[in-house]
Image (tube, rainbow, N blue to C red; front, side, top):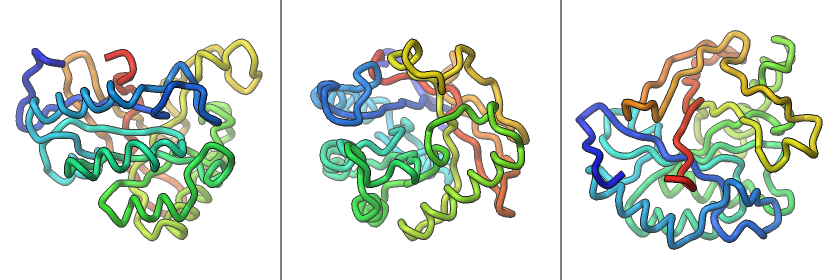
Length: 227
């Protein structure tokens, strides 16, 4: 990251999950980043220009390095949120409504507090049990509509972004719900590519369920734990 120069409408996107040592309830060690390293990477975002920002803010015209968190782990609220808020940064937190408030995951109250402080709370699907390409189009539309409505009702902010879930390498050999192939797209969705090799971040406007226009974002993001 240190030698990368970013133009006015070019950026990179960093994807995180839990923050800690990987032993916390609900945390996947493969995708967990330590607090010191997260702090270092957020500082580098500032050096690149614009600091750390959410994809929502980048799409509105702000410059910066996009920072996202998947799954809604409780460490997103306890650890990442205070760190981001202290530096005036924002990030997107993609959550699954079925997991919110369960062991190891942030509650609706905590997510609403984060949204009130400027964080972007967005959709990661309903329950993280399937690739979108595994579901019939009717069920996919129903689940995404249900997830979007639940987040908006509980958090009080419009949901405009979707991050499709991907396979966890640490679960690949133990869970039948994670197929061996990684999906390229979901039915009726045009997934864009963020954090491409050219460091350009692209977002495609998509048609979605529930009569809404979503942006399907971050289908391919750089994994911050290996940056």
